[in-house]
Length: 432
Image (cartoon, rainbow, N blue to C red; front, side, top):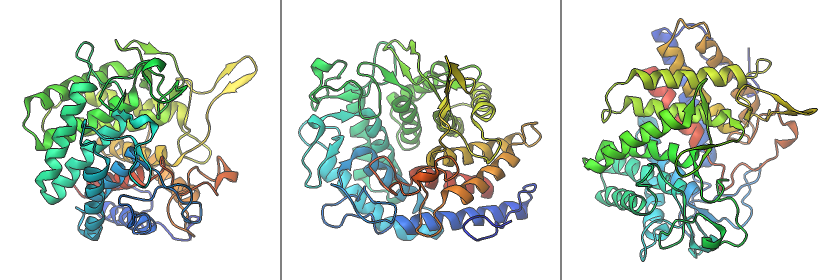
């Protein structure tokens, strides 16, 4: 059966024999090629450095092209990782372009740390604040660039950024990391300390003063990466600490991920984001593979519980794909209103690909039939998310939000890192 892009999949969805693995890996490499071709070099900012972050649905540049730390670092990280693949080595020059901007423009030479947002000329915005979420990606991006190039400046910058986070972001009493800081590193835990007027939630939606799963989950992944290239005892110590935070505190039965916490890690009630469950399961899986950690059956059990929970309560049995969120146990009711976020955004589908393929390879005889779900998800992505006419992935599936197919292809919060990393990881699993 042909999907909306007019091509017939080379893998038929059957058992993953050696031939089938090779066919599927080739299919995913072609999909990765299409993504990279859509984004590069059009998003490379030759005038100011870094990358252009705003394009409409037809890939026309729009808006002020602000430079956010998340966007710049995610682009550098994906370019560094994808350039290590033999087929995509030509993207290395763009990774170098991105690293120079991250080191020379976004890094605060006076106080250390990276600014969260700059205008195109390099002037800090948002009160010159800094944020741990973007910093986690910055450290990982520098590590990825170092692994690609062996450039000692990249490793040095990663270590400097880690030490900055250790000094200002790490909580020595309860563990984990706070997220929002003034330029000099002072933790912003109230409106009175915040240089941004009337701010209640930070740039990723975390209420001031709380810890969040987004920043701390990404810090676990970052420290896994840093541990690969650093023998610093403190890095290993933080790796063990963050594994405990993510696996044993953030995640609770039946495989749900809390989003917000008081400083002592007491959870704050909020909706369940199935999407973050998929992402967190992938971060834990990466930690479980790390040679810096001993093999641990508990971690594998928690990973499986999260994937199973999201499949049970967040999977669309009609068209395939993952819904964004709701209550821990699926749709719930407040009086006569159903509380459920049934949109199927692009990035949870990407994260779901590697989560399901990993489960299919680890548990081929499980009654949940992860391989079938993977096939259904990949078919869903090809049918409802990939823009075969203009390139790239849509913001949200055509089936769940048909009127939003004209949403921007790129914003400071939408770039291709989730789909690129997931495809790379699926290819690695299939070819290993």
